[in-house]
Length: 446
Ligand code: PHE
Image (tube, rainbow, N blue to C red):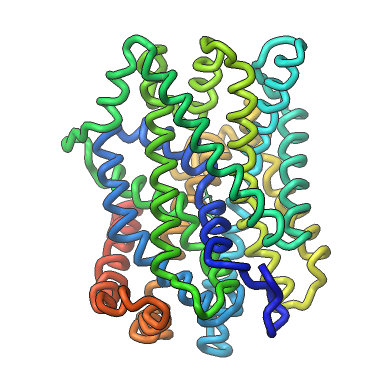
């Protein structure tokens, strides 16, 4: 990333954007959330619906989000105001900021758990006991804070330098490690039932709840609907190809999700776990796989380390969105913005940390049918708010910015897109908003 004339940073190359945006997209959403939601939603049928949501709904929305960022070169609030000064649409930007903070507050708790696993595998490797992590409330809060500080350090230094360089080496290494773990899982007796369960759709399992979960997972996994892609797109130069960048990000993200499924479900079936176990699924199954594997402790350490890095590139994008607002719109020094936002996130995240440690402070409340405070936060911010934000972004594109203008922004650097811009406009005008609105309506029983 190099400084541009406006004094804002810019990606050093198209690859820089793809790596950073893929880094934002690939994370716990693929390896923790996708398997547990798939497990609760019945397997293959969910996977199929998910893939359709990615291609037909999420990809068109992603192009809109990136193009708005590149066209305005601003943060979410600034971008909406740049298109229409003084507009109430800025509240959509504020919602994006709240969503970023909301997601970060529980995401970093789970990421902290990954760091804790890393530490216990490292200890086991050096001969200090088992590789298990039984988190007390104090230790969960500690690792949560630790992960926030890591995130803060990267964002304070400017996203670009660290991430462009590290992702180039560590992301491919994560893929290779996952392939190794998949190969191992497939040798476990009984694992093929898991492959079959994961890949064969049983259409009778598809209902409104499954479609909602799939669509929300697509937005979550691709970091859509809260301005992360918009903010990263704002660091794209006017020469870079939005369609190609967006398509690569979607490809890598989906690849990692499918590989995560192939890593988890064969082992779930072979080792007799319950696929519908919920948020703890990945953390129950993988340690069991590593325990029965030659060199398992070292592989466990490597895997949890790489997963931690993948989570870090996602938490960085969440924090960056909120930080960019305070830096651009409120002229705060970067370091003050980063510290203030992280401190607020820490406070909001404490109940989630207690929940993860088994002491849910709000266990008597059963809000929106969710289990536990962390599950509730994930539902409100990770499902509802991202879907709603994406819907509103489409409406902003249709009624305020103008989809032909958005299409021209994308087409200006993509002759290929230019030939299909009408198709894209049709999707963003009709299919995406109607599909999202329908799903939100089903959810509220309308
Ligand atoms: N996409 C990230 C993941 O899958 C999570 C995320 C959501 C990041 C929304 C930014 C914005 O892990």
